[in-house]
Amino acid sequence: MSKVKASLEGSSYDAVLVFGYDNVQYLTGAHLHYPPSFPNRYMAVFWAKGEDPICILPQEWESSYLNLAWANKTRTYTESPGNPANVAEAAANLAKNTVRRTGNIGVDVERVSVALYGRLEAALENFKLEPCDEWLLGLRIVKTPTELKLLEEVAAKTDHAIAGQAHHVLVKQATTEMSNTENVRIHALERGLDEVGHHAIAQVVTGEHAAKFWPGAPMYGIGFDRVPRHHEWMRLELTATVDGHWCNGARMLTMGEPTEEQTASYNSLVALRDVALQYIKPGAVCSEVYEAVKRAADEKGVQLAPRLAVGAGVGVTNHEPPYLSASNHTALEPGMVLTLSPVVRAPGGELLMGKDTVVVTGEGARVVGWYKDWREPFTANYTY
Image (cartoon, rainbow, N blue to C red):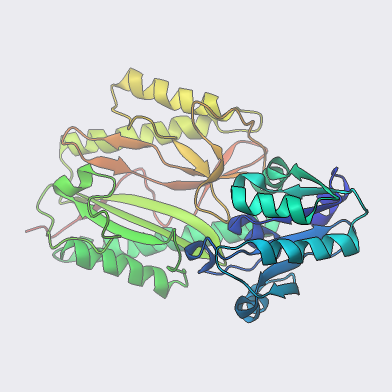
């Protein structure tokens, strides 16, 4: 809160009015699972200079919010789902009581519907509404020490959960993809990870199913009855959260000792990760990191999955700025946290992934959360 207050004091805004749910969570600490499921039910934060933040929300959400938030001032309203009039009126009343007439109010306009913005303009007609999306981006993109500690914790638990299930496959005959997927989820819960919410997912795929990003769509990761066979790839994926801070995890396992072809493919994935780590440092531009990885793939004859970033920021959402893509020209800074995620297509068509959480430091890049040395995949012993 002190970081946000200091930034707000130095900004051109007399207050900010924020509606994007992840922005609301960032400003208040309240990680509620259900608001993204109800896009027509509005929740916002009003934060005036020199004041504490106030959360505007439906009356029936208030007690859940107060149990989780560090910002404990609220203004509830009686809602008409899909009608933004009441939330706009609540925001206008707060503005009139705390902000000078004709003051500047920042709104995260990229996260506000046309209908809601029209209501806000009418209710706040005496104030000047300005976009504050870039201001919020600047706050969120560099993490506080507490955020860094939390993101390292969730990275370690995610990697441990994946490795825990891989160990079961290692020492006994593998069961179906569906069973493996459920067991990854169970390992996540055992380690205190939260597997509820729009982003949370577990998925285990093998063989020809590993040739797709989401072979079970739209079945949301319940898996298949397929049992992996000798010398096939198994890809184990987990996206999970602790206190609303996320990690994207993915690791590879070979059914039996890897073949020469599998070893070469996995080494290609490792080589691209190493290139990215070499280029990630303060002042480096995201697009330059992407181009370095792409250039290395081309030189090595590695089939890098096209039209994908090779990494992205992570925080109160599982994908957020900055993006390691050709079109993102953000300069990296110490305190940024990224998920490195180059995707390599093996000769058999399988998509190989190794997702690593990386903290940008003053010296370069620091990989966090590894349970084992992922320069080699897990290898299953019993595969028949």
